[in-house]
Amino acid sequence: MYRKFSSGWMKHCDFIVIDIICAELSYLLAIIIRHGMGEIEYSLYQNAALLLLPLEFMVGIFFSSYKNILRRGYLKELKAALLHTSEVWAVFLMIIYLLRVTQKFSRTVFLVAWTLHIVFSYIFRVFWKDFLKKKLQENGNRALIIITSSQLATKTVEIIRENNTYGLKIMGLIILDKNCEGDYYAGIPVIARKENAEEYLCRNWVDEIFVNLQENLNSPKELIEACELMGITVHLRVARIDELKSTRKMIQNLAGYTVITNTVNTMDCRQAILKRLIDLCGGLAGTVCTFLICIFTGPIIFIKSPGPIFYTQIRIGKNGRTFKIYKFRSMYMDADQRKKELMEQNKVRDGMMFKIENDPRIIKGVGHFMRNHSLDEFPQFFNVLKGEMSIVGTRPPTLDEWVKYSPSHRIRMAAKPGITGMWQVSGRSGITDFEEVVKLDASYIREWSFALDLKIILKTIKGMFSGDGAA
Image 1 (cartoon, rainbow, N blue to C red):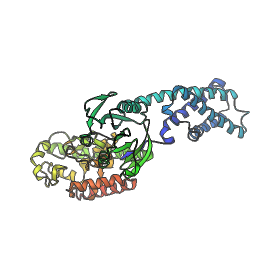
Image 2: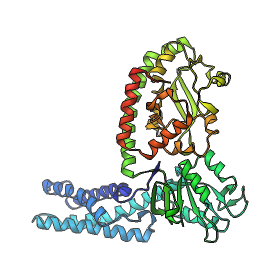
Image 3: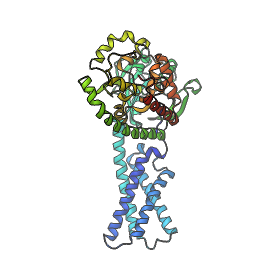
Image 4: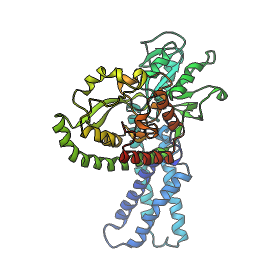
């Protein structure tokens, strides 16, 4: 699921907070400079300090003080800081004039606070911008593949780097006009050619692709359609929008380019923040439950099968990221080795998942009880707190399952993996057709809403207590 780039004032809420701090700090220092720590009319100055809070917020929003702030140079930022602080203190002066308290309010405090506000605001903005740019460029978390030509490759990389305030991480280039796999353009490797591009995109961590081709080259329509099938977000610099089949299209800016973005579904900034807050609250509650469960089941697990109480395994997360999943160990220590011996009994064809009846690897008694009531899944709330998983999402596949995925299966990984999900509450272990699993997960991603998450959570809780259809 594609998280849209933040827009409006919420995109720069950090700068609003910085300017509020600068305004209050400037005001406090101005009072100390003028009056020292002696007798002053505290009620007047305290009320004025409270007035600055909404003023900073309102001026920042309505006067577009933060538009393109990350792209502004030092001189432009100085002008912007001067204009912004002047607007704040002009409105401040007008309000105290209308309230008829100007005679009691020190003009020195006003002028000194205004001057300090300009200085502090400029310094803190520049410092924070430099920090954000460095962080976004070095630690981008949105894996981007550029599909382009040999002629445009270097320029495209340089423009995206120069304008990368979106957390993009350029993973590689796919060159369509010639075979130069293994070469480098502007320090970025060519990771695939036209013939094997689909295979690479299916098997590796790819969040988004950006297609930038000159007019004399045909748009890679089949490759774009394959990316749509896999749930990979596609940004097209030039495209006929009526030719794109995706259910979600938008025109936006991407690191210096105007693009048509083509994606399976979108989540705006407010939705993403709210979902993360829900995950954090649920993760904290789930972590407490995990410790309580561990107190009672941990000793039993160890007695029945000496070894670690917790089990870890590498899984595939959103868009191909790898992460370590945590579970209570409900199987004997040699479970992974015995899996190959039991593969013939697998009820899911092609080995896309592993499910057998009366699995002999499960620890007798405690293991079956934990799996029937999904208690073994509780340590995954640690993964939720770390941001690797969500409470509701799609099941994260193992490495051996992942390598068998076709492009149509990869759409399951377009959303963050979850502890529970659509297919788990639609029959849980009763579903043995992997294509049906993919269909249900794709339906969840396309139709996602908070109401749907709540419905799945409630069904999961009901299933936990009843034990119906548990794995």
